[in-house]
Length: 425
Ligand code: MEV
Image (cartoon, rainbow, N blue to C red; front, side, top):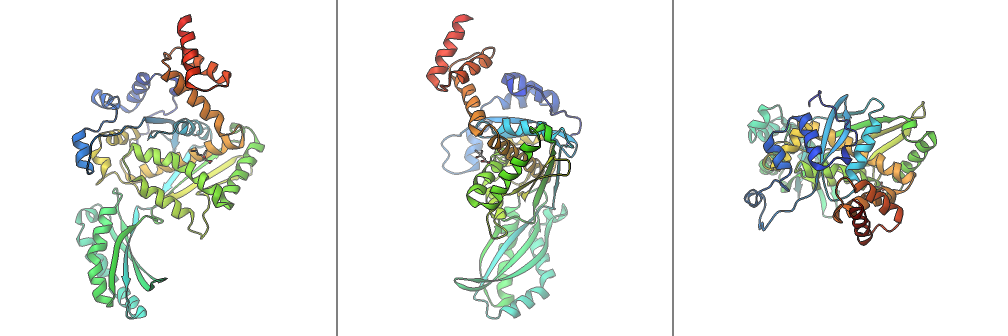
């Protein structure tokens, strides 16, 4: 990723869109065509859409934003995010701003290993099946790799095989896990092809009946970790640190709260995933199953207080993302997102997503433990309303202030305030 950028752009959120596009272009060097694409309203032609899925009759656009202030492993990055929910990008950028006062966000990832599952039913002799497959492991891995020489050439491919006898309501089964390093691909195609290729041979060797052959979305071998220290004075003092730790402990202890807490983390992660045309369903499935890996559904993040009274946050989770072989390659906006982030490896995208998830989580916990979540939401809602009511950029701030002070954050009130301000102009 580029190291020369400064992602700290003060007042970015207050700029008109044109100015924001210019600010980002200046930093990442967008061409006039790319700038035009940003303003094109979605960037996907009907023809391209028609090739992407079935029964296409149109396209749908989401706001495409850039989160600022992120510093990952000492490097400044801009992180594209897309989605319909207000406050998400603002919260991520705000929390990234206070996280960069410390050492920034440290990110790290495991090799991009996904799991392919092959289900063997009607196993005549479980012990013998396990023994035979252990003996033939190397040959089976080689056989899997023959179907994807390109992946192997880039250092990826099947690396290991694990055997998991499983008791189920339909009787005992042997589940074979093929561990595949997918490099810069999300990997579903490569893994599924390998699993389908191996299945008949596994059946022959064990005398069992192969049934399912499919990737697992519990990508617990392909994880990213983001960690940040937030100075206590940047979050309102040590008592606020304590409250955030208590709020986290609530989520970690109670699945009802953990679901919402993790949803907040996914607000950020899915927004980045959408901007990069990633399989966000796979990410959601991976995240929530990972959150339940101890047998109880828990928080994906951990928050604690260090010896200096500062807040320490860690988010570790599966990150099945890819830059090649999927829609990221074919969607022009996703290609633009790759350029804005400046990532060359899928792992870098996963690390950026995890950092956003951590910042997003802090934004929610900070708001929930202090003024409550509605305060920020209503201010953004007020901003949307005055813009919809026709406020010009020079009057937006004043109109938002008046609307918020009126206590009636409604469209007709916004219209009234904007009309009055226009009358005074
Ligand atoms: C809303 O989209 C997300 C939050 O509910 C997350 C949370 O409660 O931690 C604010």
